[in-house]
Image 1 (tube, rainbow, N blue to C red):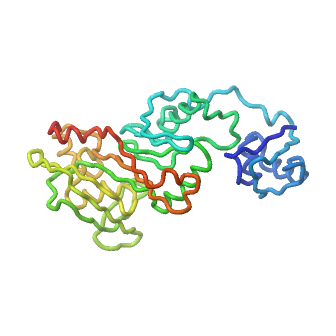
Image 2 (cartoon, rainbow, N blue to C red):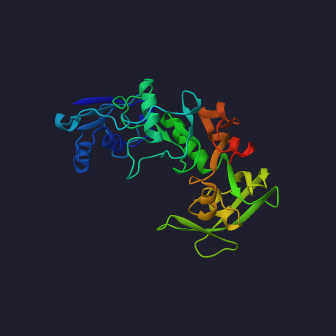
Image 3 (cartoon, rainbow, N blue to C red):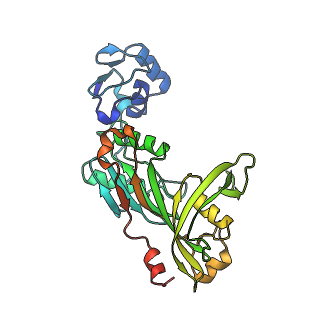
Length: 322
């Protein structure tokens, strides 16, 4: 028999979810049987599969020791790089400056060195995260940015902050502002681009239409030109996404004849090759917390704006070194 005390990060989840994460070697059919036969109890009482656990609850599991046997400890983040560009950190969250080329999460080509692996390793070394102590929660990213794009990514250190920020993100209360360099000198110094976007899942590519078509979603892209470079026929542009769709900035500017510099998917390869750039000039460089009354314990950060200090192409553009 083993006993588990429900800690803050494990609270407010169903009993069956907790048991599955805590004892992954236990087959689900057997878990359901053990709950029914009172071999898994909450506070020494019979519980249901759907019982919600509260902080401080005691879960007793009268289960054979073989199901608790763990393989040799080797954490998935052990081989990750120690390099982590931190813009802001407190007891609940981290704001990270992800560079272009780094994955946020593992994929079929890269599993070891990703942004979330670096975060876990950093917090483990600080003794703020111990996989052996946490029964179900692991640090998580609230948002993600494509591999070839840089910018600010939010990491949640605990279940409370993850839940709040996921809800605020869903309501679009976390305002992200982007910098990009586009081909051509923009005629208007600011404006609002509108259109309709259709995504091709198989090709992972989108198309932009001027009017609504089947399966399309409306998009709105607000922009301000920071500086023009007539000599190189380029513009440095700040962008606010009023809607957040797949590849919205890249596809929207390409659709009006101003593709992003270095964008091989929606841009013009001949122009990119001529200038010698292969990675796209796009950066999620500013983040504002504009949360509603449901921000709870994260109210202290509401109203604050954070900016990435080193956008790799901004200085080069202004110095005309592109």
